Image (cartoon, rainbow, N blue to C red; front, side, top):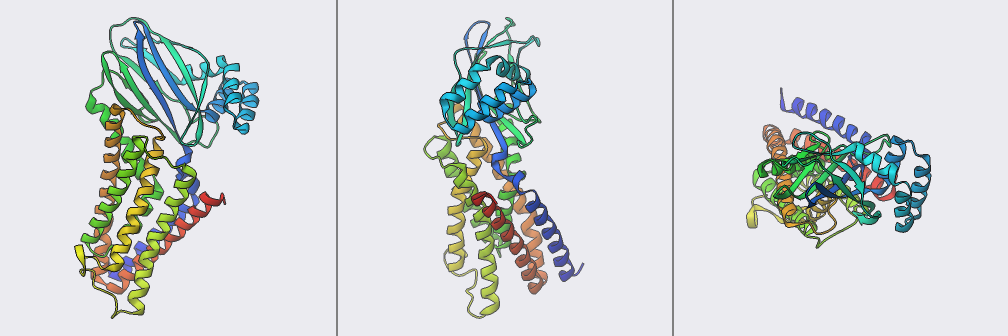
Length: 404
């Protein structure tokens, strides 16, 4: 295939993908996935205490629908609209049987031989704010048969018939069966046993991190904007490193409970970052065509970057800080995590980095070949890609910032 034909084919593929991204934009937002927290301890023999935190509105809608309790739906949604924690907790407590039946049906705890533990609610419901949303916190007491072995938790909470939740991650912390640690569950891997090895537990967080990036269309488009705007391998390595360092810093700070920014601010900025980084490449192309003799060589300056390259590196770093908050939001991190969970979150971040590296290794060589075989076609194609990415980023920004 000749260079110009290759460029045309690549452009058609990119435009088609961009159109798909725009049409599925709402599904790509972080707010359409939920996070459930389950902290498990054993206060005495034959009992397991689980502090379960679930998004209030999802719990109300799902429990009311599955258990066919219209009164819970009316009272619970009215309390949610009021924004007052008191009526919200009262609505859950007034329909405690309905809520407990729903939870018991979708989250089960068993002992080693498969015998089921029976849950009861201990005390009243508490309402807490997590990641900008009200969470209902239930203290559950599971009475378990004495098996002398491990316990297994299986969680299939959400999505239900509400139709706007695409998936749920359950973050489990436990101090049980003479072991302590953490685990991450989702629809594909809904169960966890305390007899699992530490390596297996870390593997679940690595998988969650990898899945979050390769299913996160906005983060992938940001990486694509970085790649098309990098003319040499050195430049993509530097910008990718700046992005990695920046988002790792804010991710860890969020996990330590030192930084928290509402998702309503983070998500529009992530969308804007896609458009800005793509626009920087379009500006570079315009300068090259308008003043071909005045554009500094990419090898000039410290680390082989010219002035425009350093500006781009700084922009990428700043936006990387915001993307780190987006990664933290994917796990609902808005308060200090335990040290055992923190190590798992670092593995989650490693999963993100692995997919990021894979995307770079797959995409950058193709664009590099295109540039070297035919400079005009390469510039035309990368410009078309950057234009498409910039348009999608601005569309998402308007959608997330102004609800369009």
